[in-house]
Image (tube, rainbow, N blue to C red; front, side, top):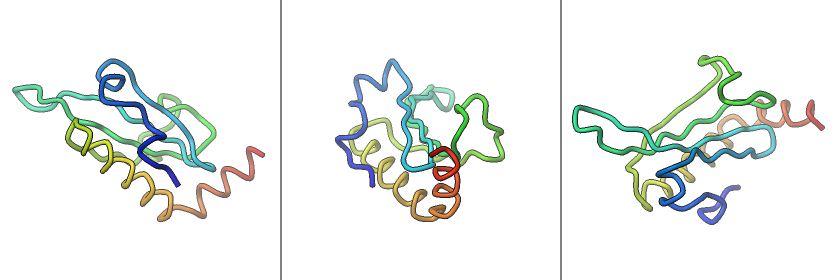
Length: 99
């Protein structure tokens, strides 16, 4: 399972996308701007291996947004773990194919 320490800090996410993988599940966190005021938000996405975010169809991705804050990152990590548990069979089947 992922922990908060496995994800980059807010200062990093202001400038860069953060990606990783967990036994067949790829994930990405990035700052996006929403609404007229362009409020910063944290978009967190998961998709199955083996391809990158850009090379994976939208149908295979699941996304959620959170506050762009330390608390939002913690919520994003919790959501990633929930997604891993909910899709464990899919992720593990993709991981075995890669191994």
